[in-house]
Image 1 (cartoon, rainbow, N blue to C red):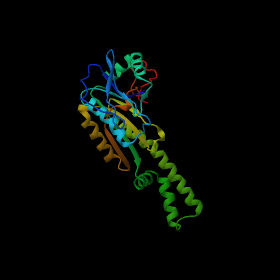
Image 2: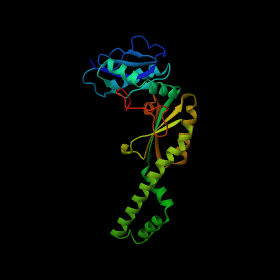
Image 3: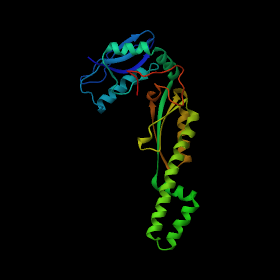
Image 4: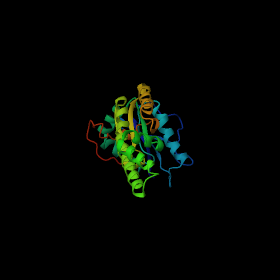
Length: 257
């Protein structure tokens, strides 16, 4: 039977709560696979597993319960290995990497920040900062709305200015928040947001990061800023560009994509 992987901890991590259940209906008992200094949290993988709310919450609950007692490297939902032996082989093969990640992520959580423009507010922002657009808009207004060509030209100018503002604001969001974080992981550009960034934050200084988010909202009122967290540090199991690895990390069969 294939093996579902929830996460990786140090073998010295406190024991799991008695009778902890994981994914599946009925839920599969969570068990431990230990190799040297590392332990994988696993269960039997149910057939036909789908990312339904119940299953996502079961996966998250295992990580939350485990993370409350110490550092855990979370695997993405749906991380399935061929069998237990495949999991223990990866633990042995990548021991140095996982040990380094456990040290680096100890006492830290992830916050994800997404940002987009508030449409009306960003139009005012763009108009205020672009004299050429203001002049053309005023000329069109004074001429009763302007010709069809003038309207098209104004629309193209506004669209171009908003697009440029998106790039500028996306970079500004990261610049404003990264001083309050230990590491940064930028999400895919195709996410539909002008900024989609995860930040690794010390648990005991999270208030500083949350204050920085509130200040960002005040400084950039033309943005809608969404905050999600604290989360297990999914985005930092593999070091990102802003967080060099202490050791070389190859591909992992049970890694968090």
